[in-house]
Length: 142
Image (cartoon, rainbow, N blue to C red):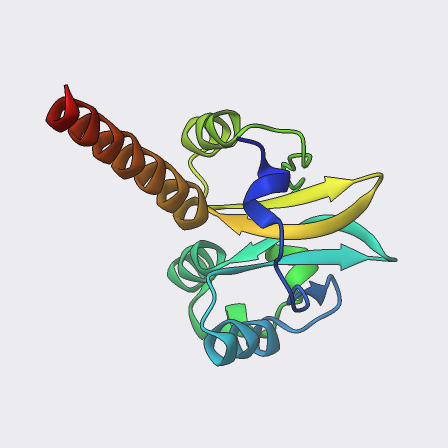
């Protein structure tokens, strides 16, 4: 299955910020929306990703003064992206290899979705459960 099918039917906007957004405002966005990361834009182009991990690392190294930075100074960059044609397994391999939890989905230079490892794992679990049920059904009727 491709990412395109995974995100098919999603509605709503992608929460994001800019490189000029103050870190304390970006943290507020993560908390308010109960999300773990946001894509960061600079001049309409994807510049990086700001995540909970960026917050933890920044607070650990700088303390409260970290909150005075802009997102552009502390974000994870460059952002690794996938296309809608990427398979779920390819996306899972990418996330595992790079040890991050969110991927922007990019088509023709535009971000069309923002997926998490949770989205990918849920799909895999649903698929495995479906296959197991099909096997149980087959065995019962054989």
